[in-house]
Structures are given as C-alpha cells and as structure tokens.
Image (tube, rainbow, N blue to C red; front, side, top):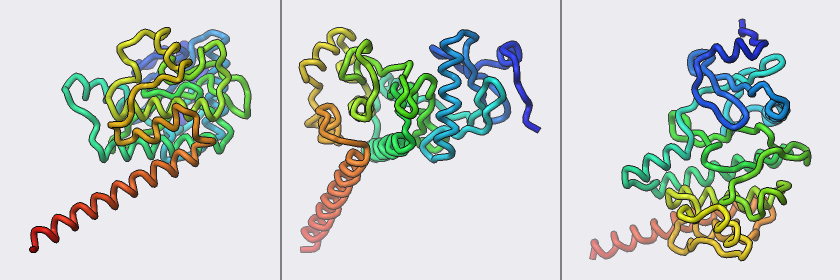
Amino acid sequence: MERKIWSFQDLASLPRVARGISGVISEYKSHEVVKWPYPCADDERNHEIERRIYTRLGRHARIVHVIAILPERGIVMERLKEPLCLRLKTLQENGDTVSSEQIQRWSLQIAEALHYIHSKRVLQADIGSQNLLLDEKDNLKFADFAGSSIDGEQAFVCSSSRASLRPYWEHHPSIKDEIFAMGSILYEISTGRKPYHDKTDSAVEKLYLAAQFPDTDHLQLGPVIWKCWKIQYEDTAETLSDLQQLFQRKKCSYIWFVEENLMVKSL
C-alpha cells in the first residue's frame, strides 16, 4: 500500500536528493523520489499548480513519470539520472562536446515534449537545462512545473535572461516565448554553453532587445536556433517539422557522399 505523507515534518525527515527555489526533492522508495514545497504560501501555491499540471499532462515519454500525487502535498516521481545542465558542465570540464547524433536526438525530444505540453494548454515558462533530466538511456524528460502556466493563467516563474526576449518584469509567457527559450537550449546543447555565457545578465538583455544574438552559422542546428530567436515560428509543430527536415537532408547528403565515394573506389 502507498505510504501517505501528510506533514512537513514527515517529508523533512526523508533523505534529501536536491533542493531548489521552491521546494525539496527527497528519497522515497527504490528508484522513486518525492517533491514537496517549502512551508510558505507562495511555494505551496506553486506546488499546487504543479500537481494540476502533472495531472493534466498524464503519462508521456518526454515528461518525468509521476507515480503518485499524495494527499495535501507531495509528488512521487521516477528518479532520473541527472539534469542536462550537469551533463553539459561535465562535458565542458573534460573538454568534450555533445555528439552530432546526440544533438539530433535531444533536439527532437525537446521539440516533441514542448509540442505535447503546449497541446495540453500548459506553458513551462522556465525552459532551461536545469529542468531537463536524463534517464538511464540518456533520453531527455521535462520536469519542474511549479509555478508554470495552465489554461492561460499567470505563471509565477520565468526563464533566465539568456532564454527570454523580454525582461522578467514584462514576462507573461506565450508560446513564442517558449520557442525563443527553445532556441537558447538548442544553442546550449550545440555549444556546451549558454548564449553569451561570458556576459552579464544586463548586457545580455540589452543585446537581445537590440535583436543581436550569438552566431549560429557554424552549428548543426543553426537555422532552427536562428528562427527560434527571430520569432519566425508560430508554434512548436513548425519547429519540430523543421528539425525533422533538417536531419532528413543531412541523412540524404551523407548517403549521397558515401555512394559517391564507393563509386570512385570501384573505378
């Protein structure tokens, strides 16, 4: 039978895995964790929003699997391996980069996830590598919807300056804001660093407001990233379609290259 946790004291007694701005993740059972809010009104409100959103989203391969929503507070979910931000940091420290195959895989998974999330009238509102988790097979899953927007309601979180076209005080999330943030996470996957990683937040905000973005011409995902930043997509279905077409063209070019080389060698 599922153990029912009712009090903050019970939750606080569990071994902690991580803690964030609005709550704590603790060990629960084998391969399971429980997320719970800090005991304050704002965090409990954001936690309640997250409970509603996970109920709305249901089971999906690109969303962290919610096992149970406990009475009053607490969300039991699968325990995943690590956040994407940590993986990228480790690669950077080791002088490594994300492989071309992994860039393709992760970018498609992000686009698929956002397309599904938006179809459920949910906006994550804080898209970033800290909220993308890797499972044991290195597949990406979205997590953390505390304070996100559902059914057009106000969001109580916002994207970082490097993933937002507007200053945080003007932020009321839209699908186009989410697509802009997608461009920034695709850039981070491609380069191992956030856009303008060596500049201050205020400097980045000024550059973005002037529509000045990092160069993407040399990147595999460059055309898609640029269109995300330039707000040239109406929705994530268009972004997903562009990614699929981009990879199909690259696949065809590779097959042509191999066949041409085989023909030359046979002469």
